[in-house]
Image (cartoon, rainbow, N blue to C red; front, side, top):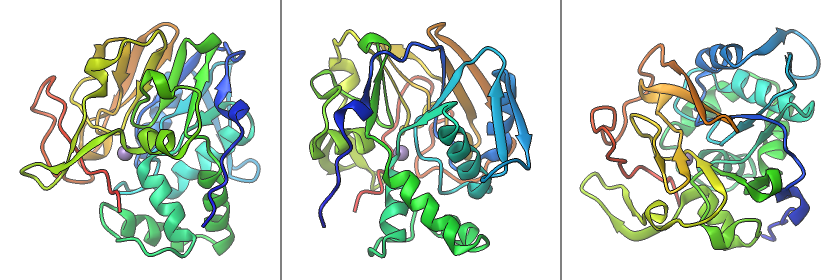
Length: 277
Ligand SMILES: [Mn+2]
């Protein structure tokens, strides 16, 4: 199957300077997302337009979603609807996560294992008209691997982006954006062992990413992982840019048990399932 690569000008948006609110892995946690957006100053009107949401911000800020919108959580459909409507109206950007791309493969008729919450996503999508799944497939499948904003000072990608890959678009770059790099080995939990690109990072651009749940978002070498595991009972975190201010909403429930505990591990970032198959 031929993969259509988006144009580079899709990825490189250096002239986009507007202040952003960058939001970590949502995984169907709609209630926490709604509260977080409101805390960030967004006004959410329900019942308008194609996807039932009309979102505005009184200061003209824009949201950036770091991917993994789907799987594991209880309200996949409204999460997809609000993000799709925000991207469509230009108030948000979104990059895909590995869970999102696995859903695209499933919706494209490919064989994938229904593990790590995908079965729950499909159940929730089944309650919607079939056209909605088509729209979801087109939306998620059309997202660029990562974005470069603000004169190259800000890079966002689901699993991060090392300096030499920033603003490029190859299969290697796309894979890095979705999964990071792994050694090919698995740890005692059966999860892939990740290569630590963050500790080697010396790039000028700030890199904001998610994918690996951590108890607290922490800066290291001008990068920050803001996936604080909301679906696992952690919290949903946003980073305000350029203010570097963290805003979060605690999870209302533990919706899904992590394969490896992370909330009690402090700064030690665990490896986590990449669902790569
Ligand atoms: Mn992920």
